[in-house]
Amino acid sequence: MAELEITKMSSKGQIVIPQEMRKSFRKDEKFVIIKAGKQIILKSVEDFDENIEEDLEFARRTEEAYKRYEKGEFKSMDFDKFIADMKRW
Image (cartoon, rainbow, N blue to C red; front, side, top):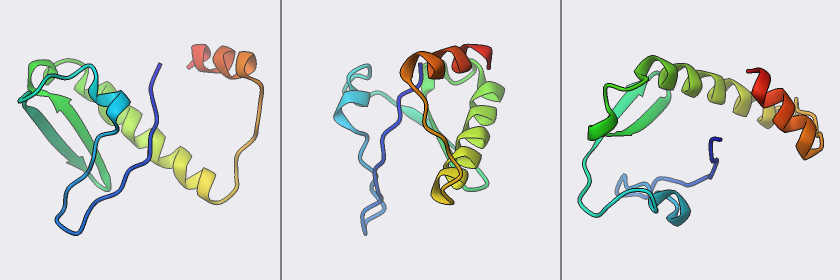
């Protein structure tokens, strides 16, 4: 399942990857950064050729969902219903 965290860019253009998300990466690992519109995808160089189209679609859907969230267009549901809905995607 995807993890979601919020971070911000510093005045020097640096973005911190939250500690919990960094655990599966190693020191000095190289990444590819893909910019598609206002979306940025960060992929390990080792995994670059895997599922790129799915990554772009996921980024698009995430951006749309966040815009709806900011407008207050969201609903709340219990965990089990959420998981059931996610499995239908």
